[in-house]
Image (cartoon, rainbow, N blue to C red; front, side, top):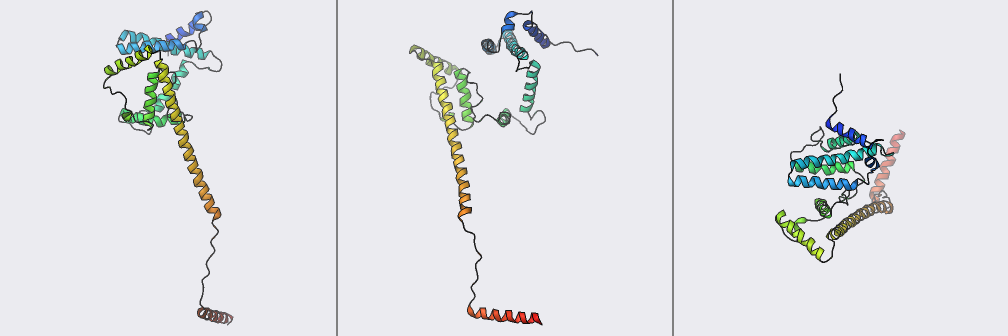
Length: 272
């Protein structure tokens, strides 16, 4: 039995390993996770542009560039003490994650007929996977561009009832063709007045997250106070209420004498 021929992906992994090995490329060998961030961002935006323009050849190339960044980071990790994982570990973890996120496909106890059904139980699954997250806004990358970050934050906030986007007011637009020029006009106005539109929106988003966190803290405090109050009430009721003594039944004098005679008769009968 012969080993299977290496796939194209295997060949790319081998190229990466050779480039970063002793005697390979000094530039590749010198890179770190941090130094590659700028390239990951750039390649990602180039892929987005290829997708939006619908250019098949450019999409093929840019997907390769993003894939190469993933392989690059995995190879760095494989040779960094304390990280010690490679692309196979990345693939294994992603496979496990996707199988776990799709119990309706891989023999779990969930069923889903629509995409909305799937989204509905994903939040429950994420709570189990990420127990350290205490807010619905946790886990959103703050380094996202401000418009993308705003969209993400508003979507999460609406999902849990923090805001109602249908009642938010503001400018009414019906299509992206209308929205694009409007956003551009806002940025142009800010630029003309020496304002930073990106920083302004990011500052407003921090305030939104701060209000959300404050609201959650107040809710927890009220819940804790109610629970403590109920416990104190139960404790006080039990402690301050004296034990009930059995009530003695009052017997009228005539009946008492009759009962005494009856008891004397019973004792006499017992002696016989």
